[in-house]
Length: 230
Image 1 (cartoon, helix red, strand yellow):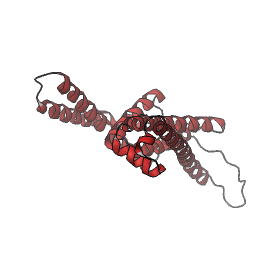
Image 2 (tube, rainbow, N blue to C red; image 1 turned 180 degrees about the vertical axis):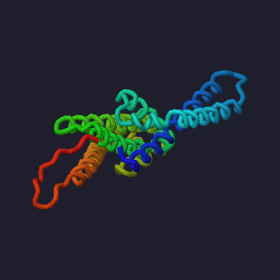
Image 3 (cartoon, rainbow, N blue to C red; image 1 turned 90 degrees about the horizontal axis):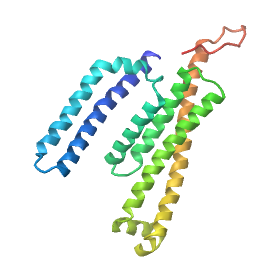
Image 4 (cartoon, rainbow, N blue to C red; image 1 turned 60 degrees about the vertical axis):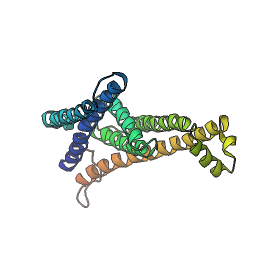
């Protein structure tokens, strides 16, 4: 891994840990507050701040190790972290698929760089990028479908759909509204899959292109060279 890429990965990973620990402690404390009488509101603030401090301490202790293992970490672990980030993105963007779509692009980039650093070729690269793009598309569309069905209970949403489709709000209630949401999620799924896949290929090709330039032969020499292992 180059120094510049290591720095980018370090900044990214350093932000994820405090964020997830902070949000996890905050939401957990809020659930306790909502279901346990007598818990003060200040306990939620204290839990959230404690989570932030714990996340920063973990960064200070483990960040270098995490950066070194970033492209060799368990895919199950990375999928779990990705899923947690999608939950945070859905909440932060109030149900709009903006955050999850952006995370899907990052998933594609990660898959491309992971394949490059693993020195994968041919079918292995295609399979890895396809799986990453499919996983990202499933989470993005799945979250949008769930949120879309829930917001159909809101009158303002029904009025907006009615204006778009040229129908009365009552006409888009029920099966019609669900059908519209499902169709939009299918489009979102396809868009996420294509964009994540292309982002993965771009990330992989950038590394492969750099490697080829690094081993370019002098003029008049043989043009054949093998890509060195990253």
